[in-house]
Length: 304
Ligand code: NAD
Image (cartoon, rainbow, N blue to C red; front, side):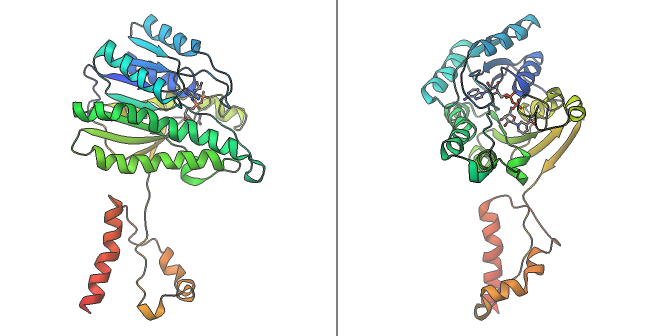
């Protein structure tokens, strides 16, 4: 079994005043990581706000003998996020790990959803994660080391009724991971995703009580700690909840090649079973790799 190690690491965990983020922050601190506990402290829908939730988690970490500092800013406030990163570097010299975990919900079926609720959820999950990542990116590049975790969701990966805004933002984080994986390769920066299932205030009214009892947030944290460690993979989506751990992947079918004369919607309809056939389905390492499939087929056709 490989060893999970943290050598003099500093982490920022966003939305760490409660729920999953609090467990991630506390476990990292138990493993000797110095932790910035970020939390805006608002309600589930993002209204209100109080820095005290972050301060309370810092007090709990310190009571266990760990080191932490509080940052009560919103991840949507770029100057405040930049200050949070600068404060961590001023105090501990570096930032090595970023767990983008802060999140809100504004669920409504799409026909009832106002665009302000769409935008707000995108701002917190997508722009908030991009802000924090941007604020540490150059620093991590200079140090040739970084571990970044995006918190995606089964809603983004697979869909859920009433969560168009949330699902759009959560799958966009997978998109950020896919490209940052490439940009961080060679710079020692690994970017991954966690797709958690846990009983928190976010899920308390959408899951049955028996399920909630099993879904303690602590059961997700080992996957996040692994993704933050020196030995973390890159471009991996781990799913975790209630003791279950798995990986989600984006795969593409082998598909078909249509000669020029047959490139029409009728031919697609006639061949849809073969297009959807999962035999030989594969995951591509990059967008270019997927494009290469079509390029290779083109060359074969040109050769005759
Ligand atoms: P939670 O509501 O308990 O925790 C979210 C935390 O983020 C809160 O403490 C909140 O104050 C903070 N936050 C909200 N907006 C913020 C902002 N602008 N800036 C800084 N902090 C902010 O919910 P949770 O279930 O622990 O969710 C954590 C993450 O996991 C979220 O990204 C959520 O979407 C994701 N997630 C959770 C589940 C689940 O089953 N609980 C499933 C899939 C994904």
